[in-house]
Length: 469
Image (cartoon, rainbow, N blue to C red; front, side, top):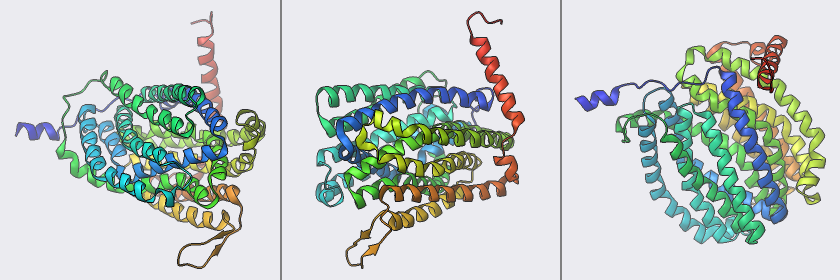
């Protein structure tokens, strides 16, 4: 009876940093360092491996992430929600999630190894089998690194999460310099360095967790029905959303080959810098909404209005600056990436706003709306990719299909259209849940920007040497 009462208790909710804008600002500062390191990593990979090698590396890791998404079952976000709501301590959340991941890996990874051994020449003819095995080994590393991040996010330790990401990128950079630049190990070295970053993240993340208060580590079997119920809904949403984001890279590889996949990877790498701020906002917002639904709507609306201006300004900046930067940083061989990047930008603006709305909706406990948007968007993505990317597509047993042959530019247009559909669906869902007007959700307000500018100036003034206190 005593154990049952203990299992059913609700712990004190982890406390968020004061003010959602302050929390986002702290998180984004860390992401800025991560972006800088990721840029250096991508430049080294592009120059060392060239378009074809870059395409093979992207394809191998994209396949690994898709395997992860299929077997992860939405457990990570569910544990974040339970910890944020005070339903479990970090020790209980991590122990329960790790045990579930161990079972999943033990059951499914041997199947993946068998499939690679027998069918890798059919699915990935240009990628060496050892590289694919490294990608398969990276799957459990991604899972367990994600479990550590999920518990930190549930405790609303967003600066620690960003510090962890930065340290992972530092380790990847060191690995690339040692294995790819110095030892000249090529694609295998790049894969080992990238996978090693997740391993370092597991160790350092656990070290960060040990600094947090909590009870003893134990499995919370009483939470399994709630985990299963929420994860099943969230899994459907997360799987489709992530496939939307990654499937086009695989389709470019399968339809066009390694070099176009490398060009498209650079276009996506540059375009997705637009998503760093929305991702930061989503990371802060999801546990914040989960722990305080009553006050969520005005916070989310204020953030989306701010993001509209920031994302549009960022898109314009990328259009003006990216062409010379691509040639300078990645080399003239990657010049075809520029137009694809430009065509991706409308979708990046839409996706950034959609991710923030999706985080709020999931935090309220309605992941089915995200699932609906994601699967509609996935259908649009696949249909438009098949229409726009190839000139002709021959499938066994079926008549040849003819497309417009726009190549990587077609993939970019398809993604932009699909991401816009996602934003439309999530906007309808969010208005249904909250009743908020469109102008309150997306129309910027000059007074808010004047207040934000004043705060930034005040903060800069306090930090200047010799400034009055």
